[in-house]
Structure formats: structure tokens, C-alpha cells
Image (cartoon, rainbow, N blue to C red):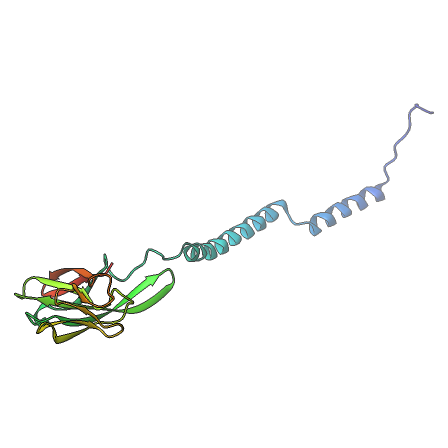
Amino acid sequence: MNCGSEKVVIDERSWSSHIVVSQLSTAVNPDPDRRTFLRGAIAGITATVATLLGIPAAWFLRGRADASSTVEGWVRMASADSIVPGRPTLVTATVEKQQGWVAAQSQVAAFIKTEDGAHFEALSNVCTHLGCRVTLQDDLVEGSPGFFCPCHDGVFDIDGAVVSGPVPAPLESFEVKVDEGDVFVRTV
């Protein structure tokens, strides 16, 4: 082993070729500042797209179970002037209810009655036996009007109390309020 002095000879041609290779590798590989910019731009675009898609997706997944078109269950049924005192009047209203993403329309019906035109009562038109619709008939209960269920001959008096038939309970009554001349019924 020769540990003596060795002479290192640098050939001018090899040094210049090394410089050329170094310049080529810099031209092929992007500048570190450019690379950082492109990474940041791609991350920003990705975040923007994720936000634009994520917010509606989260809103959809959360659902709209709390949405409802009826306020507190009150439904406008009729004008107070249209209810004839002393005789129940069958009144219907269309209610749109929304549960989640499904909107459905349903009919709400009730017999509304008043004696003085100021105080109102509302009775369901659905029989408590099997859910058939009752009708108002004159001279049904001892010469007085009453409600008749045609499904199984159920009979109710004018106040909705059971008179005869297989009916287990009186007609359901609804809470009523009058606001600015309109009669509202609470259906919930």
C-alpha cells in the first residue's frame, strides 16, 4: 500500500462534462420553488372541490326531518262566518307535510260547530271503531241530528258521544282557535 503522495490530476474535459450534466439535471427537475407552488395549488384546488361537494352532501345526509309546512299543527279550516250556528259543518283542508325529503299532501276534515258564532268546537269525521268516515244525518238520534257510520251502523249524538253500535269511544275532538275571523284546528 502506497500511502505516499499521490497526485490528483483533474482533467479539464471531465470537469466541464460534470458541469454540463449538472445543468441538464437542473433543467429536467423543476425548481424547488415551482414544485412547492404546484403542490400548494393542487392542495388548494382539492380543498375547494371537497368543500363545494362536502357541504351539500352533509346537508343531504343530515336530512330535513325538522321541516314542516304546518306551524305548530294548526290548520286553517274555514272562515268563522261560513259556519252555520246550531248545525255542524263538514270542512276539509289540504295540508302539505314534509318528512325528510318526502313531501306529501293529505286531507284534514272535521265537523265544526258553533251555537253563538263566537265559540267553536271541532269533531273528527273518522269513526273510532274502524276508521270509516261518518256523515251528519238529520233525525238520527230521537229526532235530533247525529253522526252515522255506515260501516257497522255506529251512531253518535251531535256532541260526538256514542249512542249505539260497536263503537268503542266517542268521536275525537280537536282544539280550536279563531284568529282574525278564521277557524283553525290543531291536528297534532
